[in-house]
Length: 329
Image (cartoon, rainbow, N blue to C red; front, top):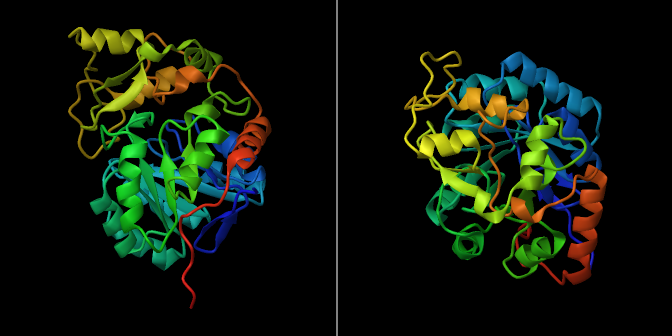
């Protein structure tokens, strides 16, 4: 059966798939535009990069697609408000946010006619997000890469959140690697779509250094671990020499803060510095965020082929979703 489109506010993605927004400079226009062109929602990672650079990247993406382009901005960032305003000023289609909870962003979204999507991991936060005006809610579980809001798996936390989110689309995220799992989350769990990130690192269009992609390709199941973050949340990453050194108690802190990117930072290492190092190919000293099931992915593919496989696999087993249905007016 054909997959239904994903409708968020006045936007429609023909394929119910959101590409997760990966910072710093992992998800750029180079990736987001091809995703949008394939019918999904392409997302730029908007955290910890200069505002003018983000604005230029959003405009670049929108110039190269007629599809839906969003930006992911972590609430934990010190310049959260300015970054949100900058994205809205250049006409981003939607904003996704997590790593903390902003009530004010919903008011800004209404004022600028920009849908706000909230990433949550509990029923309470999901219900609050919907009540405050979220256009959609993303349920992110422990299998996801990067910062985590829960230690519980997706299939455990999703049903309770599905029970309380009734009037906006609900998106499943964390550890989804193929179309069969996409169909499972939509058909059996009532998701209106999925968000995936790690699979798109291993795309031809993702413009990270090749060493970054090779770290993904070489990762075994036991190489993907939980680690600490200066944000104050656990994170899932590949067990690089930097992670091992930190786990062994070595001093990995920097002597000065050049970025001043976080509202609250415990300074036991510089996350911006380590993410940048990995993105540019320094895997020894870098932080490589990755989902729990990264080890299952062994090919670098064009974005279009990733979509083709997800859709064909999903539609071969998809029956009928049981997710969000707009209320009759």
